[in-house]
Amino acid sequence: KYNYKRALCKDPKFYLVENIKAKYSILDKDTYNFNKSRFIISVILTGAVVTGLERRRRLNTV
Image 1 (cartoon, rainbow, N blue to C red):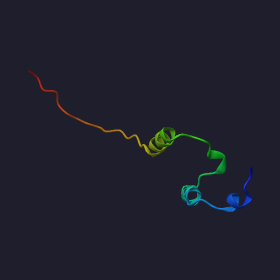
Image 2 (image 1 turned 120 degrees about the vertical axis):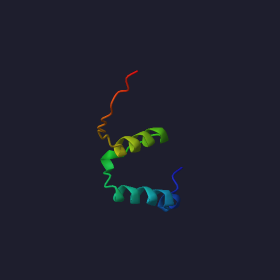
Image 3 (image 1 turned 60 degrees about the horizontal axis):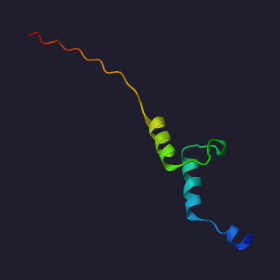
C-alpha cells in the first residue's frame, strides 16, 4: 500500500547525497545502485595519482 504522506517526508541522508553530488559535480546519469566496496574502490581509483620517481644510486660492489 502506497503511503502518500510518508512519500512526502524527506530523509536527511538524501540531502547529504544531493550535497555531495553538487559539491563534486556528479551527474544523475553517473549514479547507480552500488555497494559500499565498489564505492570505496571508485573513490580510491579516482583519487590515485601515479608519479615517477627518479633515483640515482650507485650499486654496491662486493
